[in-house]
Image 1: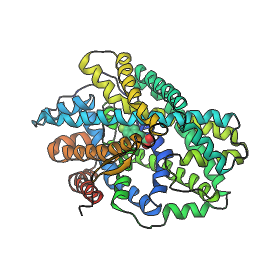
Image 2 (image 1 turned 60 degrees about the vertical axis):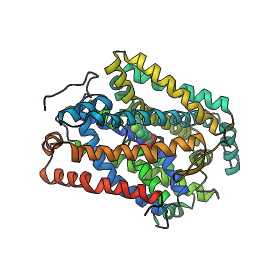
Image 3 (image 1 turned 90 degrees about the horizontal axis):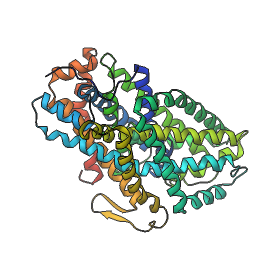
Length: 456
Ligand code: PFF
């Protein structure tokens, strides 16, 4: 069946808006907060190389598949998977893939919101002049005081969830289109300002060497790099699929995917180039963990000309970048409730946002009163806090698994003609994409999974 569907949630007004919204989803805390700290924890160069390979060979083809499925299904990921499986006369059981995506988005948002809260609180810390002339020790203790205080974290987490719910309730288009058009380019410009500062520290080349000189990596590091490729491109859980469902027929999926992946990668690399020189110049530990950017960037803001202003604007933009990603994390679930339960967007956002907020309490406490409560799952991980566990399960397991099955569905379950109709691209590009999603992408994901459990 190839009858054309339309989305009941509306459509992006132009291709540019879709690209901006999808880039808004992709560029977020993953690029600026997570990429540097996991690169630091995994030793730099080789990790970055594996991550870049995963973006190119796994991420980009899956992004094309995800947008394609969304645009063809025109509904929330759950209903899209159901509809497409039926179109192709396949088992409707594929719907579970949509459900897993919704679950992953929900879990990711629960901790994402807490970390976005850190960025918000840093707007005020920087603005209040707290970092003027600060030392590395000073920056460390300010960060430790913040995360050690559950009430404060809770307050910021609550504010962030509320503003996310507000935009989602208004509808992705109205809320989001305006926000991203201006803010994304500005964030980019500010990152460049910080990189320029990093060049003046005298340790710039050390940062570059750390990021780009190959060293060693283990199976777990490879899994983290691959998981991050999914996380940073918002793949494997239906966020990009749901955005694809608001995309009109005539736009090129291939071109859009490449643009989004490029923008996302450049932002992550810029963040790395901004942060590591500051780490080395101040004798900090690259593997310091989730606090890394909050312990390093204040030093830059406390010492550069006009640093207070740059810092305030930077953390504000980081908050916006997190916001535009958070919206896409919750959208699949909201779209589903609107489609299946006949509720309006406001009601759906309040319910899902409220539940997410509640689960987020676990992350709030992971940094203070539950700091020592850890979990181990044989073969998977050891001694992880609530936050670390959620992060690991979502980014390293659920997203790659979701992405793997999206690739398998697009490449093996759908008829070739259906995907060809939807991709509308040159035969050579179509063939390359199809080869990648049929063979390279699934095999690569499976090898990485097996390596991580030391099975090969
Ligand atoms: N890509 C976002 C980031 O890098 O911060 C996080 C994210 C958004 C992950 C949406 C997954 C998702 F579906």
